[in-house]
Length: 192
Image 1 (tube, rainbow, N blue to C red):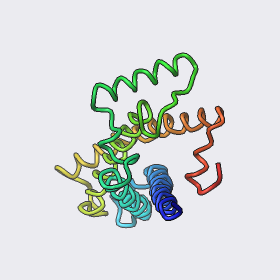
Image 2: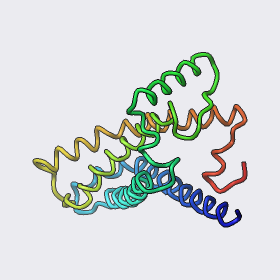
Image 3: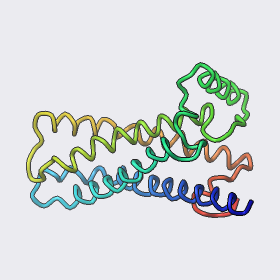
Image 4: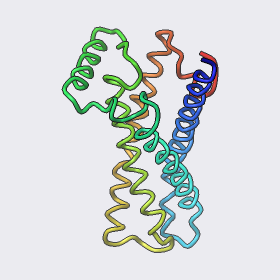
């Protein structure tokens, strides 16, 4: 019994480290995005800082995506991404519950939280893929042209997805905390 519980705790620790890496590097890369405009110059410290934070984030996102395919059941995309009628119905039920000023009570990643997590993963994947392509193919000191310019524009267009997701996600965390559910503390390895 203790060996099984230890294994579960190790998986939770892996999940928390991934989440913490996504949080730290994702928000840092987003917050330093304004520095990246200096890529056009020979001296491009801002671009270097932003791109290294972004590529570090992409590493943690890759871990999360792997965890979504091969990790524990609660983290597998096939178990919670809302693409079936039953899962979409759960999203609608959760929205109706919120309209009645109540918090939905569902397992992790089910219903509305699954939709929010799916949106977040898609938004951050968008930024990670376009950012990684620029990391590997953009030559600082030159203007972008052609396909690379299009990729840069797509990366910049996605910059609004991040604060939208963070607002929704952090708003949900705050609502749960105000309702007495302090599971956010686990993310930072604190006791609930």
